[in-house]
Image (cartoon, rainbow, N blue to C red; front, side, top):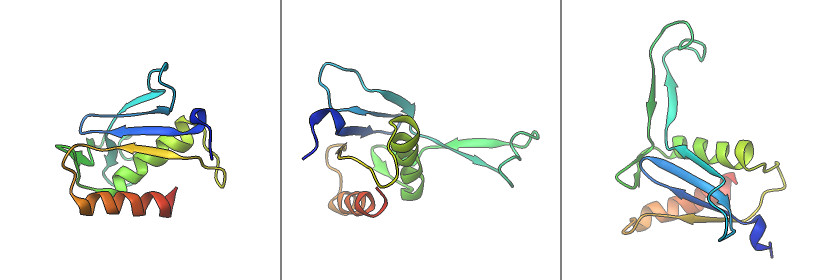
Length: 115
């Protein structure tokens, strides 16, 4: 069993995503917008003056785009919290009230498959 300081707590919402290690005396380690960048054309297109837009995979507490949420979680776990491949830790996911059972099952399945 992992000790409490290595357990990651994630709270994703429509506006922000908070993540950190399970320590009640510590604020979340990462607070970031729940948004992903969509660039038109190739990835360098936004740099050359083309439009880029940010979209949120979560609307009113419900996940609308699971691939985008997975991208945000990957960024949090590996880039910000320092996870290493094949050496991942435990995760506690917070979710909004009245989350449909299907969404809860899909989130659980995705966490087991990808993290």
